[in-house]
Image (tube, rainbow, N blue to C red; front, side):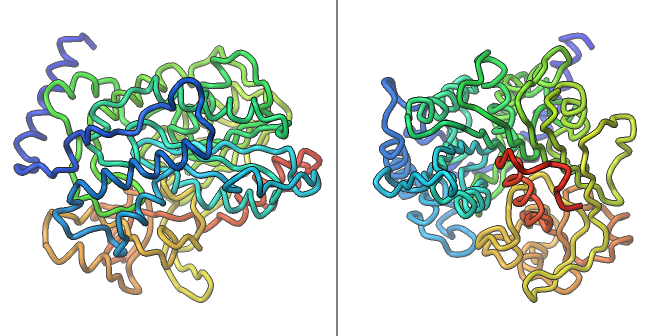
Length: 445
């Protein structure tokens, strides 16, 4: 495909978006002037990095009228939202750290969130790790351009994400109390973890990678056009900013930086020789799940590896990419129950994988319900009805949001899945992976 043709396609897409988009831009779609940047040089103490980032986020949220003043779904205050979006550390200070090796003393975990997300997406995993290893250290980064307002994604740079990841790793490398480090990445955070190991040439204290919904390649074939499209339009999609934990709107620049980060990352020729645990939904509509599966089979050569592959009746055929160490989890049956609460589920979405059903924000009974499909289009009552829900409402990936699947699944409204019904198995798998005396073949089937 010629560059002229690519530009023509991108221009056409941009014109469509410009003519059909929001005519009055939300204040949150402009750069705040106070975006979170990569940590300063020399490296700040991690506790200082956490507190300064938190304060910056709160100031920006206070200065911008989120969603025209109606606030976040769930009634969160700006302070609560800032706490959810900020980087964090468990325990909060070194004074609270214990050293018992039987309880995880010496272990460190660096958590890296995904594109337009925040560290909150890693909270369930952080709590699971702390419960299993109360004497370990858990740190979650905030990637530059995130946490404040989506307008700050218009200026962010993937090189700063790489710098921030390196800072997080150095915070453990410099700590004499830490002898083994695990990088835990979700979505593009997984790409950052992998790229750090690949580019550093020396794993150092890193003893393993945990990659959840790894974004090694975009799902859309138009991903290479994002850099051209942003010349014509800032925004690929605009929504009211209703989620206290992450951005709702998505910029072309964010897509372009993601493409730059992941370009060539899953191509052949690279061998990953440290332990790897991956968890992937075969129904993922955001990233290329088959590319992640292919990377696992062809590039992860260590004997200590496992891929948890979530498959439903809607998953495309993956039989062409087969290898050992793949644990296939069937998501059969739409009728589910969690702690007495009934719900319906079609399949597991990209964003659902790292989140527990118990999560107070995204879980089965969480305060946020993803009904973006109905936001600002069609019947104005649809969004409210989706929020309220009914016994027929269903969770799933965006692939089920079409008329054919509506007839098959017999739902009234669908919400994009925000939690993983198989989280308990995932939690046990991560703990077994970290506990190097645990045999991966003993994982619950």
